[in-house]
Each structure stands twice: as structure tokens, then as C-alpha cells.
Length: 240
Image 1 (cartoon, rainbow, N blue to C red):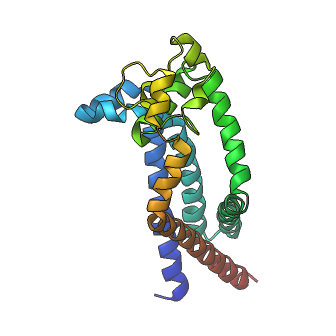
Image 2: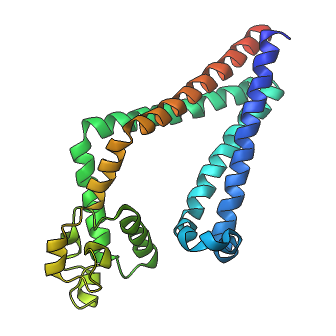
């Protein structure tokens, strides 16, 4: 088996796995979005904790669609030795890679600026939509419960909010430690950390894992680009 044949077979198998993973994610996303109750019944005793995942149905659909597209282009392009599809596959992976690197650089260089944008968005959502919009409320409730945090910065994000005015000037239960009614006094004494700081703490503790995953993903993307470009150049050379 020559080098070209080996690389071609590996390219097909690798992208077939990507395609199947995309189809699976796509199917699960559609199932969760269309019939979330049946999905939770399948999970049985885990359904209560899994309720939070119903909201990620559309996210699964989006990621699944991208994976299906990439898997198809890479697998079909290698099988049919299509230079056009291989080049398109390379271009899409390159765009994703550049976007990831750019996002990382921006996050490091403008972390305070990014924090300001996130804070402005989160504060608006907490003040105007929390307690009114079911989706926003559920997302924040899940986040605050899982991370054991309160608001974006702290409990003051809920001051003068829709929830605060509609619940006898009290804060969400997660903003207090044990009190059923979270009054401003109890919220201040509780000193529950904001979700942003809590998330940063978790990321700092797991920096090696996060960095390893990011490096692994980038490594796979670089390998995919190298292989697709090798096949493209080989086919282009032998087509002349």
C-alpha cells in the first residue's frame, strides 16, 4: 500500500467518524428539541438532573450539521479524489482554526473588555428577563445551582430587577445560603460569589485539562489540514 493510498484510507475513515458523530448529534438535537419529554423518560432516574440539557437541543443541531458537512466533504472528497471538495474541506477547517486562535488571542489581550461586554449583556438579561422569560430563567437557574453562585457579579445584579419587584423585593434562593426567602440582608451576609468569578476559579483549577483539550483539538485540525492538502497537491500534480 503506497503512502497516498494509506493517507486516503485514513482520511476516509477519520471523516466517516466525524460524519457519524454529526449525524448522532443532529438526531439527538432534533429529538430533544421536538420531543424533550420522551428523551427525559429514556434517561429514567437521571431525568431531573438532565432537564437542563433540553435547552441545548438547537446547539446540538448546529454542531451536528457542521460535523455532517465536514465529514461529508472530507470523506467524499477523498473517496472520489475531488480536489474541489478537498480544498473546500481545508478552507473550512482553516477558517475554524483561525477563528479559534483569534478568539483565544482576543480573550487574552482584551479580557477586561470582554468581561465588560459579558457583564453588560448578563446584567441586562438578569434585570429585564430573569423571572419573565422561561428560557433565560431556566438557564440562569441551572448555572447558579450547578456553580453555587449568584448573578454575574453578585446578588446586586438582581437589584431593581423584574424578579426583585415581582417577588416582594427578594433575591433568588441561590443568592442566600439556607434561607427560603432571600432578603437583601441575608443576601449581603451570605456573600455568595458571582457566576463569572466562580467560572474563572473553576477554569483556573482545571487549566491543564482545558489547555490539553484545546491543544488536542488544534492538533487534530492541523493534522486534518495537512492530510487534505497533501491529497490535494498529490491529485493536482498527477492530473497534469
